[in-house]
Length: 176
Image 1: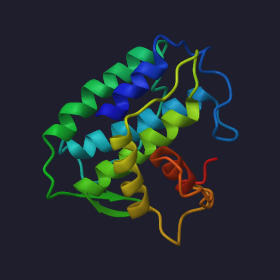
Image 2: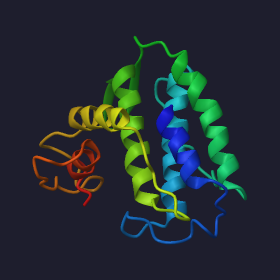
Image 3: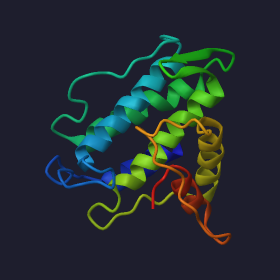
Image 4: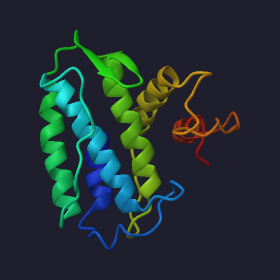
């Protein structure tokens, strides 16, 4: 999960107080966003590991006293789960049923969007390779249609023909 590894680099050794500042998600601190992203990743890891076809978001303090260590633990859980997942399974979520590949794409969209949302952090940026942004853009296009949930995604932002893949991904999610 290369995107999670980029998130680990971004977080570095950041403490909870380092993450207390506002994120690019209105009304959410960086701590809020990272905790949400960890919860989503753990939710999908439960599906990918075969534990359940109806994963729910875990509750409680997922960052703990050491957010970097918590994120490392999530990577250690998610990577083997997705590596060994049975791709014929269906992930049943409150907003629809998704094949394993689409579920992985939804998880990627969340990591990419929220990694960008908390960036920059201590002079570090969420800097993914273009191939991740390409896969994320394809997954976001498959996930978001004309009936997008405006509680979760702002309307798409227009971008120029010369926009990078990252810019197109972010614009599709309504980020500027």
